[in-house]
Length: 253
Length: 321
Ligand SMILES: Nc1ncnc2c1ncn2[C@@H]1O[C@H](COP(=O)(O)OP(=O)(O)OP(=O)(O)O)[C@@H](O)[C@H]1O
Ligand SMILES: [Mg+2]
Image 1: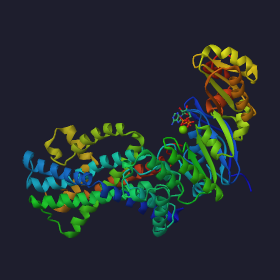
Image 2: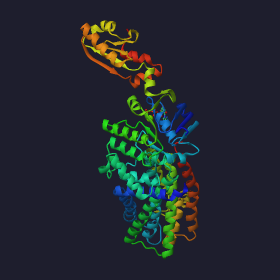
Image 3: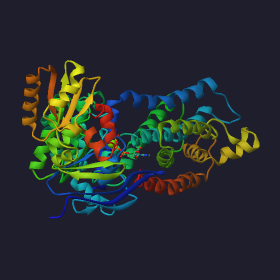
Image 4: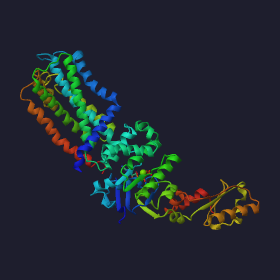
């Protein structure tokens, strides 16, 4: 059974990649959307927000973290759609490794996110953002972002299975926005009213953003935040990964 | 050897609705078993339990010698499933679908590709293999779905209303495919709402209603339960129905009459004898007929008879004379 776990997961990953090849526009839109947000906040809204240093150096890491958080929506939508497709019945009636469907989903989503990060970093560079921390710190920052994305991914899978129907996903999607914006992606907690600042500071996404800013050597970073940016996603994974795998195994029993 | 499918006392409940209510069934190896029943009878629920998609609440189910709950993985190596609704990846092409399933059956990349080509060829889909399945017609989708269920030449094949929505050619192809599989030793359980389909393919038939088997036997045994074949006579002049009933060589108490349609109908045992007797008697009496036909009982009639709903047949045909 486990002998085939790898090859089955790879087959399911290929399935997602084949979907991309048939839907290049969708993939493109998913890549362009965060770029649009970055440019909007960078140029239209812009401004200092009570911050020393260049706002772009503050904004870009925040946008990277926000993009990882919003990945949850994409995962959730894809999983809900998938679970409502007839093909899942065929998968479940075949002797394939349990959970290969989910692994395929997560590998594909991680690939897409890595691609999204690369594009966003490229655009950030073009509008004047620079990493000041050296190569090791840079790779560390990218690692933290992807770890955060990985946690979001399994939350997305679990929420998709709880929500069940695509109509329910919309409700959850609307909730993702305030959670994304109630973070330090665009402004520092110090510039907000007391209680709001506290919420924002505790938001796991803010932890990742702060640690990444620190590793990039830009404004808004605080040394010593890396552990929180590792611990939060791991804690979320410890809860949601087993929940999701269990729930998938018990589907429609 | 033992039976290919054993179902004992299976129950499945949705809320307070009993989809399956103590169903029993055995299917011998290498045979075709038809499950016949109206909408909501529990056919799909049964197929989903047999193919490990659903757990029974109660009862024992074995397929190819393995328990579908405790030994689901072993069962999955030995079955093929054609569900009531297409189980295909709609975004991908036909060939991509079959290759993917072949890999998931662990055929290996090369063998999966060869097998996909074989099946596309066999089901007349070779030149549409690249098109996304969502652009397929209903019949093409059904054929591809059937191809997918045959990738490994399974020991036991489940077909849930395999020909619903197919044109006569598509239907004949499915029937051919089933026959050739059975020739190769596969056991088939198929659900259908068409008596003719069960008649054509099945060695034995179970009639299911409200989650239970209410009758089983060969097609002929079931039809005998309803009184076998019938003869229908439509007269040109409805006013002569009474006279016709009186003189035709038919069992009087069982003749039913529908005045609106100028129709009289009766069960027959000797098909050809009854037909020629009726035609001769009408000619001699100078009663003109528009149509005289022998027909099999319909599923309606078999089913209504079996559930004690015979009154409705008579309602439909008219008052017995
Ligand atoms: N997921 C479900 N939730 C609630 N009720 C269900 C569910 N699936 C089936 N049922 C109920 O169980 C009963 C049997 O359904 P099933 O689909 O097995 O019938 P069927 O014989 O396949 O009918 P059809 O000929 O219409 O396909 C029906 O009353 C149906 O409403
Ligand atoms: Mg059904």
